[in-house]
Structure formats: C-alpha cells, structure tokens
Length: 356
Image (tube, rainbow, N blue to C red; front, side, top):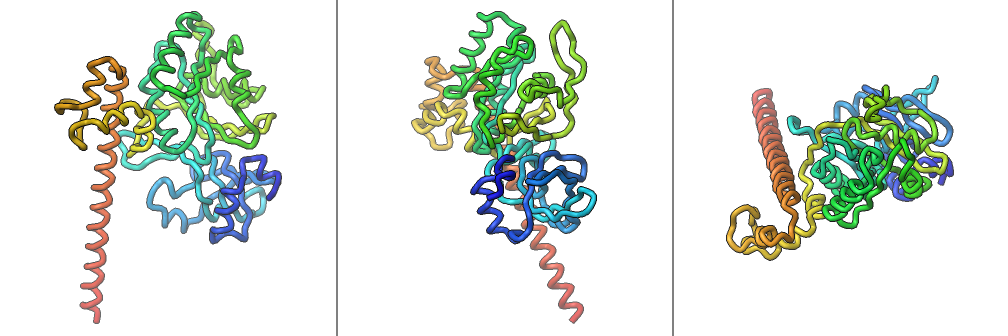
C-alpha cells in the first residue's frame, strides 16, 4: 500500500473498497476541499482540481451521491493539475445533517474517526445543541469529544460547574476545556489527535473552531476575521469545508458554522445518546409508549423521581419527534416515487401498444 496515501488516511478498508469497485485499475485520491461544482483532491504525488462527470450528475438521485470532503475517490489525471472524478469508494463513516425546511440530507464530511464538538461558554452556551451534534456523530459511528472553548471568559468555579453539568448529561463522553488566550487544554487536545486519523470540528458560528485549528496547526491558515478585544470573539469567515494536515500526522477538517443542526431518522444515535431513557422504555406498559401520558410509563416514573434530568427528557421528546417526522416524510417520498414509477411504466406500455 502506498505510504503517502496512508499519511492522508488511506487504510485496508478503502483498499478493499478500491479492489471491489469498477474503477480498481485507476488511481485514488482524497477529497480535501469542496467548492461550487469542483473539488480539490490529493494523492501521494500532488493536488488536483477535480470535477465529476455529467453522467454522475445525471445518475445522482440524492446529495449523498456526490463527493464530500474526506471521501476517497477514483480519479483520472488530466493536464494542468486537473482531474476527473470517476467514482467514490465506500465510506467508512459519514457525518450528515438536514435542514428543517429541506427533505434532502447534507453530508458534512466522511471517513471521520473523531468529531470534536466545539461549544463556547459564552451567552450562547447550549446543552441541547451539543446533544444534537453528539447524535449525528453517533449515528455516523463516529466518536464524539466535547470541546468547551473560551474557558478564559468564566471563573474556574463556573467552568467546573459546566464540566460537571456536561459529564452528568453526557456520560462517558470526553470533555476538554480550552482557551486560545491562555492555551489552556490545547496540549490535551493535541494528545488526542493521532497520526493518519481524521478529525472533524463541529459547532455553531463564533464558537472558535477555526481559531482552535490554527493553534493546533501552529500557523494562521484559516481566516477567522477580526477579533473583538472585549470578548475575544472571532468573526466567522469559513465558507467551505477543507482538510488540513498537522505536523504530527493528524488530519483535521474544518466546517462552516451553522445555526441549524437538524437530525434525520437518527434512531441509532438517539438510543445511544439517551441510553438511560431507552433502557427504561423497555419496562413501559405499552411497546409503543410515547413517554408523555401513558399509565405505567417507566420513563415518566423515573422523571417524577428525579432519576432522569428534566431538560434532557424534554430534548429527548423534541428530537424523537423530529426523527420520526423525517422518517415519515421519507417514507411518503418513497411511496410517491414508487407510484410515479408505476405511472411511467404503465404510460410506456400503453404507448408501445399504440405504436405496434
């Protein structure tokens, strides 16, 4: 296996995918940046501006059929640093979200080992938002780590209370408080980043993702806008997903901040994040219990006794409803597509009869 490809995250999983693909005889590269209608790809010898074929665009039925940052793709190299992307190798892990007003899901990044979920301790601090990011990480089979940034803005006591609150809500999830002003926690963050593994930074605009990455890289590669001295808030300027490479061999993906973190049919992620509620639900009187008003509901009983956190319970209901709604609309969409397919088939049959 090519050592230079290993250095950018290639392993046996992707090699097997390459051998089993119809493009096994052409080179592979990794998507390291995504632009409008183009991608930057990197292999063992250089970087290229890649584009997908018209056939791929025509055959694509959803956003997931297009390349994403982190993907391994089969490429045909052209002149002047250009390349044609012929196909996408099977993905090991996928981070995806959806917008509440759109049916289609959006891939944030692929083939990620760990997702650093960055939340600042300022006035926008929100446990429910962290929970959403953890769910989409778990759904993609990706390990989440919570980075509590801008720790210098609050006292040590306040910081300890927030960490305790997070650990109580998200058991077994690693929490790292950080500050780019005091460099607090940066060494611990670096220690978690291993050679040849890929890490993605997630969070809302203004939480300091890009500035943290600049600190880890040791240089200001990513623009973060001007810094407001009173609060040390960098204005968010990241507009595209891009991959960066650390001196220790770690691979980092930065993402544009988002105000909206929609989840899709994340049943696996919900069960893992709300594992205590999921276990209790097995003892409910009714198998289809909504955990809102039914008699002998184990979840409501635990809530009344204070075993389950009230805010966590409320967010569970909200996210469960959101996931079920997406699943329902997805099924409705499939049913419409099925009926339309039948209509087209019948129309073709009638047309053939008229012709012959």
